Image (cartoon, rainbow, N blue to C red; front, side):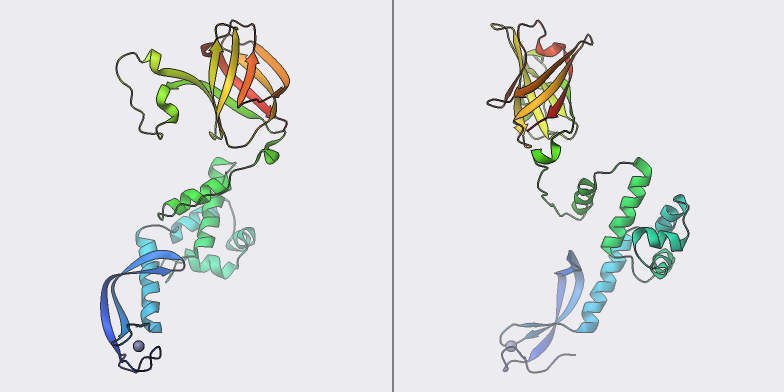
Length: 280
Ligand SMILES: [Zn+2]
């Protein structure tokens, strides 16, 4: 199918070659073709691709998506639409496509699945219908991870958090909590008590601190370990285990430390919750 003069060097002849497990990218995603037929120049080595061959790869890729169940299957799309109680027409209006597209995606013997963008949007709709509030960026990065792709998205800055409320849960963790990645925590059987610290952590773990009680000054403070959102001044409410509420306003964060209570008998293990309200 090749055997023509190479356009790259103008001298060699392009010869057919079969590549086993050929790595390529289709629609931006990594894909391995079992046996790829590619023309290679016998002089300069330039690769020449035939349109019908690359089309075959795309078809393999589409089948692979279906087999590995990466994209939603026809009956899954139909199920999402029906759970929302929508006709094909209204579902098309909802996600911004044509009725014909919905029809094609729901067809049992369809030739190719919906585009990844459409697939992600339908998955988001489904997830939102199931759980309500969705962290969209987190959802999308998790979906990318399923394809082996890690995407680092910049964190929220403090300016977007001003006025928001951050709930910090207080809990005991092993002393090496911050040194080891999550999931590899190992506890020696002995002296567990001594190896524990008390930390306060937000649900999304964007702010984490260690509670310290200074016996000399009878002061309780929070030392922030992870201040990825760059807080400077906060209002806070501290709730103790016996349900006392202490409210403080315009507290400065100095050297990553917030003085919570002074002249207090409340040690770190007597705190249940800290509610922070960033001011700057
Ligand atoms: Zn050549």
